[in-house]
Length: 145
Image 1 (cartoon, helix red, strand yellow):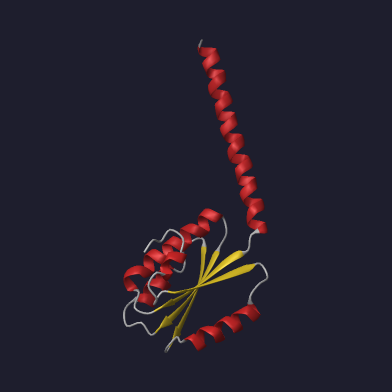
Image 2 (cartoon, rainbow, N blue to C red):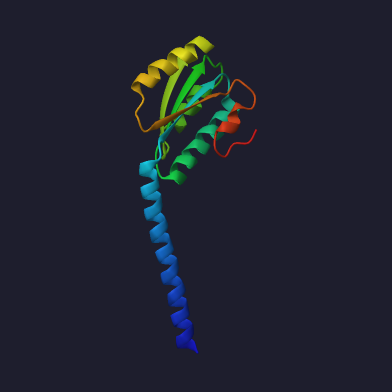
């Protein structure tokens, strides 16, 4: 009875290893075909939420198996929003760029989008999130507002 049980456990272990191997190969192939994500966050005094937003994006990048680019456009925050973002900028799965602006208006956003589109890679998908507007944070993975 024990030898049969050993063969059964060996078979289950081998099947689990094969599933992990095939799934890893699938994720590597899938990441080549998907566009790279680039999040542009517009902030103003988001000290309380900034750490969670950046950690969620970092985890999402690690889970997908590729690097998520994040650009933070800060509208002269009077709190530690930029300090928190700078501290968390070295996390795995995330590439961070910080920009401080005097005031972020619709015209500034349009100008930034146009200049960024010229520099944008073909395999990159850009998502603009204005955190100054309520409900915009729902576009960030793992964040529910």
